[in-house]
Image 1 (tube, helix red, strand yellow):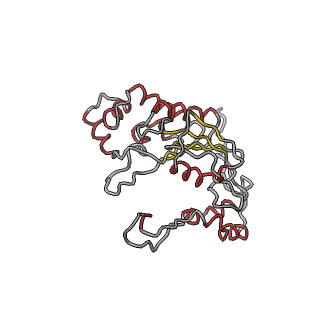
Image 2: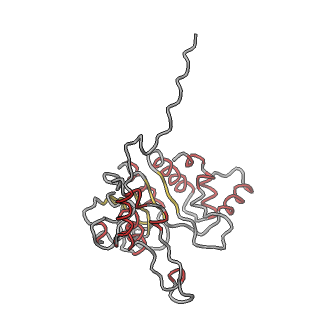
Amino acid sequence: MPTPTPPAPPPATWASRGVTFDPVRAAQILASAEFRNADANCIYVGCAASGPLATNQSRAFELHNLHTALSSGLTGVNKLVAVVDEGFRVTHQEFAGKTIHQTGTLPVADHGTHVASLIAGVRDGVGMHGVAPGANLHFTALNPSGASTLDITNVTLGTLSAATLGAVAQNNSWGFNVAASTLQAHLAANPSQSVAQGLNSVIANYGTSRWQAYLDALNTFENGGVVVWALSNDETMASGDVMAALPYFDTRLQGA
């Protein structure tokens, strides 16, 4: 007689994980200067150098209810977050006391420093703090030389290094400003091509083998972490940035 299948366990909740939220503490965090200093503070719309005056400022932390999450005591302590960007100022005050791993040379650059501070800037009563103020960081530069072109081999090595170290997330606030529909059309017109071949054709000729190694590295990372991509800043683009849409083309990347 077959053994009956046991019922599935109930879905996990914050309470079943031992996490409780403190509304009083959440309100204190929300009102703190360090929390509010992450708000946008633009004079002109889009923080442009000139133009229409900005009237509605972004309050991303509040919109994401970060103060409630932090009120539980969850801070990302003992977790590692990877960031791939143009460069980083590793001596910045928001990284004080953190363990910082790196792959290759790290040029100094504002954008990566800004992004990493929003992710994991330390909560010490000075300046601002990040979403996971207790987390440590792994940095990889898009190009160790500081050039504007992508060094895909360096980013592949950085992705694998972060995965080996147990990073729980990798942030990618960069892309090629190529619509996903462009790759979709190319692959439809060339059905024998792999995704790596398509990327090599429509984005940049880094070599199909290097593109495949990079896709494989992302898949390896997603065995234990989540890969995050920014969408293009081009508001005229009718579909998502091709890098943000990679899981659509390489279905192995849908599992994170």
